[in-house]
Length: 328
Image 1: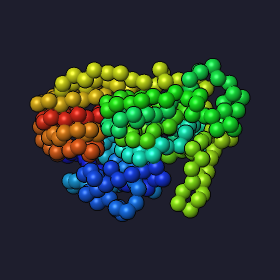
Image 2: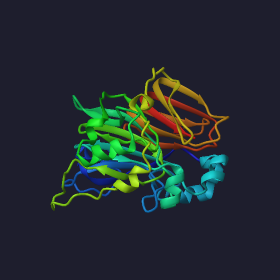
Image 3: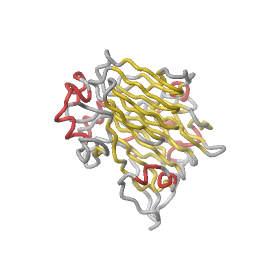
């Protein structure tokens, strides 16, 4: 029988990264790390080519996500999802440590990404899991009637951040970032990112910084301009919610994924009988025991991701934890 599946995270060096990801449970689960380097991302569950996640527990240990989909198909990810995505797991789950501001960037939608890169587009969401005082992010334009010409002029004059919304954040804040929305995560933010399976990013502005060798990173100005939704502003992106103990409370609902906040305090009993989809648990805080159909159990700890197979009907979670639950 399929069981709650956990994965080995893949740490990624980034110019803007720090050391926070090394101090969590992620650093002790088989990831290849170098303490002297700066890591900005931990890919908790990935089907991106060359970065497929590997199972960390149980009978399927050491198999990657594509291999287990090939064997279990709709029982693992859902019949409709298997018909649509085949062996490609449709979501990419990341943890980010922003020790410095990220580049201002935009992602293409499905149509443009397919035309240019033979890839899915990249709609995503952010959950702010932690932040330093005064930490902020940039999302959308202040003036949603901005023209393409006004945008290009601001870009050429190094004024791009001035025409974007700068939003100070606190732990628990949620932002939905549709493909086409211009954005940047700021220094001091720790974020869980849930997105389509795509690694296509158009870098627009990189704060005029250089790496240790004095080199600037590549910009994608021409590619980006046709991908930008100039009418996207912060109000369309911000999400609010009120957590309810032992209930899944929706925080993002789009055509590519749905994410709920699940605050476990004691026992949460969840009925997935009518859900023709996998569910991904990302534990933000605490730990809990997860049992499927009264038969198989695993412990979910802070920072860990767990895949609940689509074939599971009843899920019981016992403990005290804050969990992001994502499915299609």
